[in-house]
Length: 403
Figure (cartoon, one colour):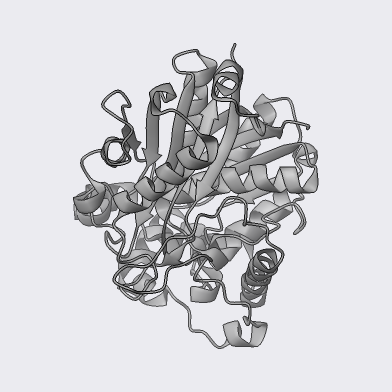
């Protein structure tokens, strides 16, 4: 079997998912094209060497519809011969794009793939695709589909986490992200995005709040109590009646911040890397896709991590870096406890609660960040994972190539 390697990685800074956000004036395809040109420029890659472009995107409608991967390849000037595919596994789309592309390389179906993801939440808001999972009452009732925030509060209630514990994690990830930016942890991979119409561009993740304190988060109101009272709690408790009452403890400070952004990884076989004159940075050992109860929902990323580690014959203590999408504090605390993954190994440079969750792009960002951190810290094994809606989860396991 052919090995699949990470050859390079670029991402945009993450902008606030708002009309006032720094990336709002850029369309999602513009973000991908910007990265595609940057990737080609820094690798001197010939477009004809690229076998495919695979992008994750969670809301494939309007500006994010019509196979944005193929559109971006054409607009980047990569010619008629470079195909493209866009996939949707909700928030796990980007990490799945990387995992599936690596599997194709290992099977000798392709040799060199650009894989990643994109999401412009400010221009194509969450639930814009109006799928039955969000809008059809019969589907929602049958599946028990609830809002992710209510699912997070359900998990916190089941696990018995306190508001103070959830807030403390929110403070921790903000401080780690701010420190990572001060120390230049992202300089290699972040490609600044210029402004439009004379406006200033963006070179840093816009959402990081270095000044976050426990006292400040304690003053915030619960974010999902209203949704619970409007019928979401009843749906959740129909599946978990033993809970009795859901404690609504998560706030905007202990929830992932929605963001705009994009990321691309260049993946290839050893022969393809040699042809392109590139040195592999990490080997993709494998990936795992799992699913859990769609009401509990957010534990699937952790189950995917457990699955991919076990398949490789490894143990959690063998993993040097866990990049885990911060789908609310409760799930991060659960992950840390169950896998004995302390702050130095789990999201050592902060996570999506601090730097932003750009749905389809997040998983690709995490894989790239995992490789970067392994290189920086001289670690060996790393895992990147994301939980998605309806109880899906995907994880990718990588091994740093010793220099």
